Amino acid sequence: MLPVVPPFLVGVIAAPLAKRVAKPLVRGVIKTSVGLTLEVKRAVIEAGEEIQGLTALAAAEKMASSARTGGAESAVR
Image (cartoon, rainbow, N blue to C red; front, side, top):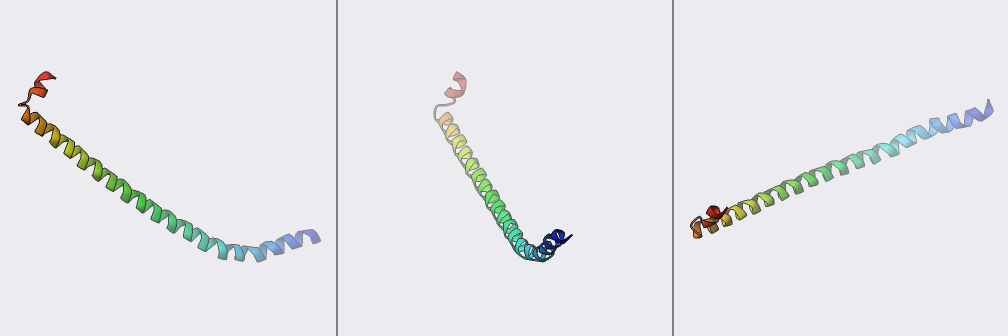
């Protein structure tokens, strides 16, 4: 019975210590994850806006080119 007592006592002493260390560590990991998620969302939104701008620019250039040629491009297709 004597060998069982020391591991039990180590567990009783180590559990509160582990809780004190683990709680701030987990809190930091969660805060970092949330911050990273928000940054990724912001980057995706900016990329989407950039793609929309490029699409609008390409469409405007295509319409201007079509207007200059008098619609000959659309008649060929």
